[in-house]
Image (cartoon, rainbow, N blue to C red; front, side, top):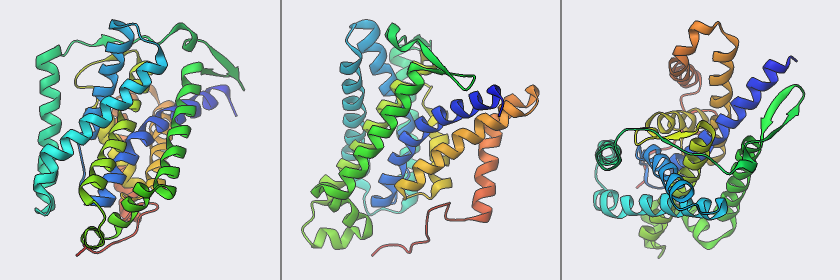
Amino acid sequence: MSAYLIQQIVNGLVLGSMYALVAVGFSMIYSIVRLINFAQGDIVMIGALTAVFCLMALGLPLWVTVLATLAAGAALAALIEVLVFRPQRGAPQVNGFITSLAVSILIQNLGVMLLSAQPRPLRLPSEWRGGIDMFGARLSMLDIGIFVSTAVSLAGLVYFVRFTRMGIAMRATSENLTAARLMGIPVNRVVMTAFAVGGALAGLAGLLWGGRYGQVDPLMGFVPGLKAFVAAVIGGVGSLTGAVLGGFLLGLAEVLLVGLLPQEFGAYRDAFVFALLIVVLLVLPSGLMGHSTEERA
């Protein structure tokens, strides 16, 4: 295997790690309230801007910045749920779909109005700029950090969902929201927690995304958010494991298709992403790990 191919695989796995962090938020929210929250991508942007403020303006340590991005993403997602989506619970699904698009556009335009569309640099501490050579490919310290932070975050999410009382309540609510309410589960708090957890992971993804590509702007979250949604659909929307798998597959496919094809095809990488989505849904309409479900009572 050539060094070039190994490098492209590394790049694809790094990109897939960031897609996976955002995709699990899509799947977690959908599994509970059957809502696709397209504002998830804009929370990625909020996390990146929070990182710029903490690192570049305040000069805070990286670990404090990580906590701040987690908190900012969680707080914004929870606020959106309480103010926007909770009053519409029980309305037709198309209402939530349209509302999530409206929230996304609102956040983007507020960012442009308040901060301008001018990209801002995001430079991580110098110790993250080095790297190591492995099998002829270059693996930066930031790439390693992305792998580790994604693995730790997803492992923590699995523990939270499987072994904590709130996680068990979330699983029960995802099976049947009405029955969960009748059994005394605090559904409003469960749904808000799901939004907050998904928002925290999206905020962390924003820090990683901005750190890897070196700049941040108010419109940066739309395309990554849309691709993370594609990853969630490919894996099986509503399945956390499927969202992670879909994220890695999408990242690898996007990088390898562009890296191995002639250079003039590079401009069509987004088209490859959505073509892959169409192919997967033609073969597996419920995604790789999804399953058909009837509407809940």
